[in-house]
Length: 289
Image (cartoon, rainbow, N blue to C red):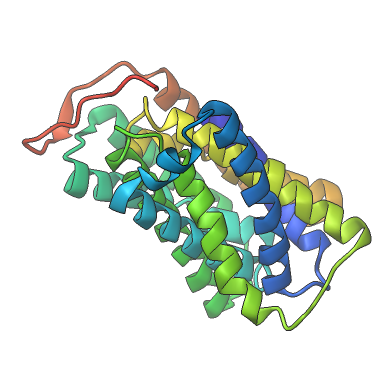
């Protein structure tokens, strides 16, 4: 489920690039409408007769998780307007390390030998992919993409922290907060035609569907492993951008992508649970509701 979520997210950059003439705020707003509608439907089907109680039961962890998702979405989409899809998604690759450190400090989740090895493999893959000589040097875009990585790491960790309850409504909260934040900034802009269809796809399938899968998987996979496995996004996003818009993929990008995919596969199949970096308290896994 987590790997499939990353695959869905990998199409987001192509969608944003397609709507190049549409403002960032309009993209985020219309995407969030589709995201909210899909999540309302999913929660209503899963929690028949207890929709309101499920949404209000996410607590502080759910609110922080939703706010972190909004922050990640806004900064990452804005970054896609300033730097290439490949560059933005590569910088997003910092999320596993950030999630691992946050998970260790907040959840007492141990970082195992396998985690360190796979994070190292992913870091080498990112370094190789970045070494292409085509970096735009746009500092604002780089910082915004890193903000997206930090927000996504926080979203992941607080999803795990509140896993004793159904955290899918936290994704709904993220969509609602995005609507509240971006609505006043749109300036009355409306979109239609293919742009509207792309925005609906991004919100309902690419983001909403991916987050639903990711949230379900987060109940059974630790924070570091979650973001590592979801790095399928980092590998496939440049491929879709090359296929749709001809954005160049260097040989080093392909080699780095192979290393990252190897790290994803190793982590997904790992059975080792011997931490090198342990905190005293563990949060036990909880069965899905």
